[in-house]
Image (cartoon, rainbow over all chains, first blue to last red; front, side, top):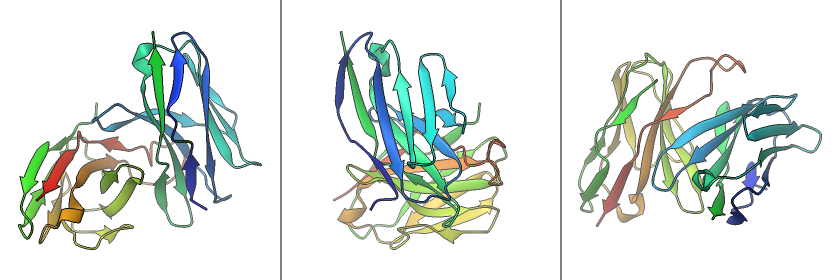
Length: 110
Length: 118
């Protein structure tokens, strides 16, 4: 089992739609969790950290479910500019390193 | 804003050439990292450094070496480039420590260096 797994997509949604991605992680001792956004041929950029209680930043909501070992990202009212690959990143305390998922691709169409 | 600058955006090299990829950050971050990114494989850690003159192997260090003579600069070296090292190389930096909420483990990436080895 991969340490961090994501559905590669692509998720094709129309503008204004709500879309959600999940990411599962294998190490139950994992602590910090993040979502990064990567545009085509650009570097990854931090979108948001994921807190235990869940957190929201505008149209974006991140949730952590420790019991089932997954994090989620919900995007409301999708914009064309949300088209990107979303990377799930987990801090693995055992290996003392960040582990990246391979990303979920989102395509928002007019 | 933290800036991480990678010296070359695109390089084309021949098999057997020595390749230097330079990375400079301007926010006094202790931690610096080199990743490569390949389709379907995601980001894989090559080497990292938590201090000047310190280096640690990541998941795929074979065929690579690094140098960190100054805090702001972290160089990746391919001693003898091979075609399987054709990839996107990403440098990143972060604050020290591992405590959640302290800003640790939040990576700022450079724009990447796309290397093609013929």
